[in-house]
Structures are given as C-alpha cells and as structure tokens.
Image (cartoon, rainbow, N blue to C red; front, side, top):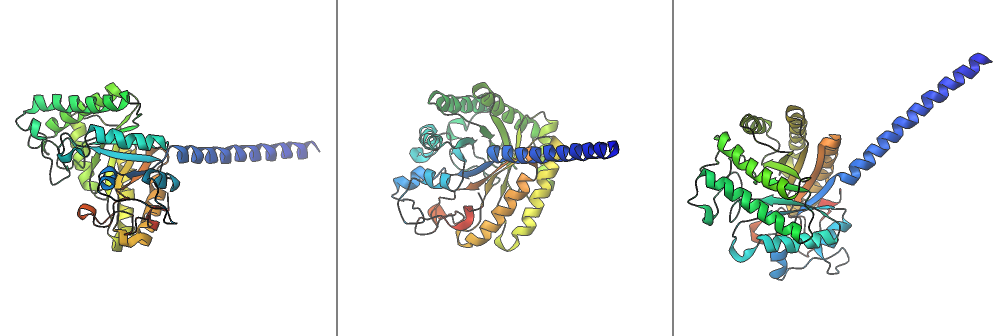
Amino acid sequence: MKRKQQSGSRIKAVLARGLIACAGLVLGGAAQAATFANGADVSWVSQQEASGYAFYNSSGVKTDPFVLLKNLQVNAIRLRVWVNPSGGWNDGADVLYKAKRAAAQGQRILIDFHYSDGWADPGQQTKPAAWASHKLSQLNNDVYSHTQGILSYLKANGISVEWVQVGNEINSGMLWPEGKTPNFANLAGLINSGYNASKAVYPNAKVIVHLANGHDNAVFRWFFDGVKAAGAKWDVTGMSHYPPAADWVSYNSKISTNMWDMVSRYAKPVMVTEVGMDWTQGATAKAMLGDLLSKTKALGSNGLGVFYWEPQAYPGWQGYSMGALDAAGKFTPALDPF
C-alpha cells in the first residue's frame, strides 16, 4: 500500500512537472505572439491619398488603410525618413502624420533613416544635398543631429518609437564615398552616430542595422564581421527578403539558415524589415509569408518580426508591383498569415 502511495505520488509529481512545462510553452508562445511584430511599411500612404487613391475593405467600403491593416492583425508600422525630399514626402512632418495614424490604432512604430534626400539601397547611397560637401567628421555630426532631431520631434508630439533603423539596405555602406564599404571604420562611426542619437531620445528603442538579400549568408557575415571589428553598435540585425515566386521555398530556407547564423554569431535578435512579392501572386505570397513567419518565430525571442513592404501600394504605383493590393484597392490574400 505504501509503495502504491509512493508510486502515485511520483506519478502526480511527473504530471505536475509536465503541466508546468506545458504551461510554460503556452505562456512563452503567448508572450511571443504579444511581442512579435506583424509589420507593414506604409511610407507611401499619404502621398497615395493626396493623389486620389483610396482603400477598401472586402465589401468595397472605403476604409482607413491603417484600420484595414489592424484588422489583418498588422500591429507594427515602418516609416522611412528622408532628409530634404522633393515635395516633402517622408520628411519629419509627413512621418509624424503617418505615425499619429498608426499610434491611433495601437500600432508600434519603426523609424527607418535613409540618410539621403531620396532612395538609399545597395545601388545608391547618395548624400543629402545639404551634406554634399561635408567630410567624415561633419557627416558624423550630421547623422547624429538629423537622427536626434527627427526622433525628438516625434517624441515631443507624443509618438513612442520602438525601433530605429540606422541606414537602409547598407550592404555597400552609406553616405558615399566616405561611408562606402569596405571602409568599415568610417561606416562604423556613422552607424554609431545614429545609434547614440537614437538612444539619447528613446533609450529603450532597439537600433537596427539593415541589409538587403537576407538569403545571402556570405554577404551578411562579411558585412557584420567588418562593422563589428570596427566597433559598430547595433541591437537587431535587419534583413530584406524578396524571393522569386517560382523559388520562394529555397529562398525561405536560405534566410532561415542566415537568421539562425546571425543570432549565433553576433548574439543579437533578427528582424525581416522588408518582404514582398508581385501583387498578382497573392496565393503564393500568402504561402511564402506564412512559412517565413513560422521560420522567424522558430527563433523564439530572437525572432522579432516581419514587415511587408508597402502592401498598400496600388499595382504600378511609382512603377512598383510588389504590394499586396489589387486594382480595386482591396488587399490580396498575401497578408492573411498575419
């Protein structure tokens, strides 16, 4: 009888441990679900609206695009900043306007500094016109002042910023020629100017360093080994991901491998800050995004989120075809996995 009681006690103890472990998994999953960023970059939205474009729900009712995205479980918004852009789009005031709309829907905010008057990516990292004659020491001051100024402006107007991206797709550096790779010493200084300015305004914001081609592990190792050795500071490794529709499975596998390697190699979490696929491939994009979300969440607390790039872009808007909106202004199935 005593042996049975002891055996029963052991069984109860094992069951209790199992229940506690299961509860931990559930709570851990719930915590990740609460903090994981289902994101969208909607930087074009105000310019689109000013050009007469509108957005519609599945019933054809005109609806605020931020509300539409919220209803699709998009809980985070990414907004780019240009220094002195033509027409004012993506300057401080335009960013604040969009940030307020996102905040009104309870969406978290990522600010993406391009450090240019227009597009910055691996093929172009042009200095703002006002900085064109500036050498490295002044450029460091420029980056700090611009970053601190924009973020302080947002903060003074009640905006909470959770992530700050210092440079956009900077595989080839930024603020050419001074910050061009492989001059990692100069580039690391510029990154740190943005990092320090971000922390001065939002001490708890996570600073992202972002590269294109998230599937290319060799490029990521080369770049981050270089800036790390030069003393660069960053909190999150950011990636762009635009897999071809016919081969997305392979590309998703490669970015997953790269994400795990980045976490292991640099002990920093990762985030896919851009993803997209042609709007005509809605069903394929849905499958791709669902798989990418699963692979990113598999990293646990080291997989912070995934941001679709300009899902609200009408087909062909400014020559872009990789949004998630059809010609009638309704979202395709691409965002359903959120």
